[in-house]
Image (cartoon, rainbow, N blue to C red; front, top):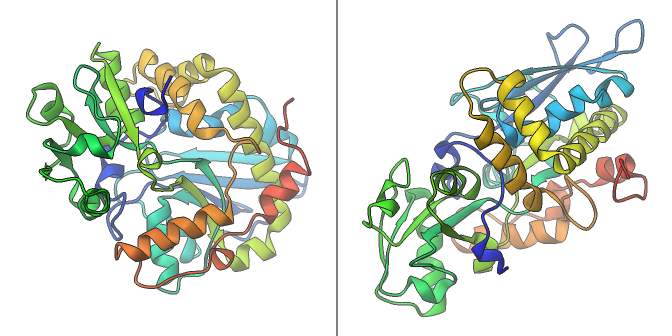
Length: 352
């Protein structure tokens, strides 16, 4: 099946769409605050050698974070002598700020926001990524599909203000005309009522929800449009990566196993998220569907949670070109793969 005709991925929350290309809007964080007693980010261990990792999630406990919960349930953190506490976040949690200020040792955040912060001098380092390509996409009805940039011609497409400049640049480069961009609402009603032919949203949120409601959709990802992307990059600071390298390796090694387990058992993990990790009314069917859809966005030939400096350099160059980044960065200054390399130790899977 053509990639643009599949619904994949896992990120919940319209809030993510609102700041995909823009800096300074709300961010999605899943951070680790390492401490001896939960009060600082020293990475100290207890007398019995157990490292306490307080994870401050930047959003609700949903299946986008199912790999962390799977690692906890399967005992992967315990095997690394790590005690974990995952706390649900909300719209006011700014992951990179938590990390840069020292209130968190690690976390995950929107790739663009991290790069903008780094360009402004924040000493942030990306050491992995949950989604190998962003779930952000143009969603259309299968009965009236948008499968490529040429299909934008003559259409009305709802986009976020933060992403409008990017899409305008894409259609201009492709020589596509007669495209009408309108502001995207908070849900895909514009698409289902026929007000627009395309709607910018997340495959794992709006597209999955529409599929669950019986609306067949096509999904055109950013990478289908030639825009390289990552979703939910793992972030720390340079000092903390250097000072707590071994602890980060232990934490990441267990987290890798958790994401591999979730991909192998999506129905089980989706159900656990909805019935145990978050008991605030999540629908099991929705979380299971998300766990299944996100698998393709999480996996890569080299394993889960990978980040490639070469791809990141392309992302940086694209963001500079459209004016999102104030200056060009060297990916080598922003990306460090040493924790990933140590965690995998030459393998591409830790469970097989």
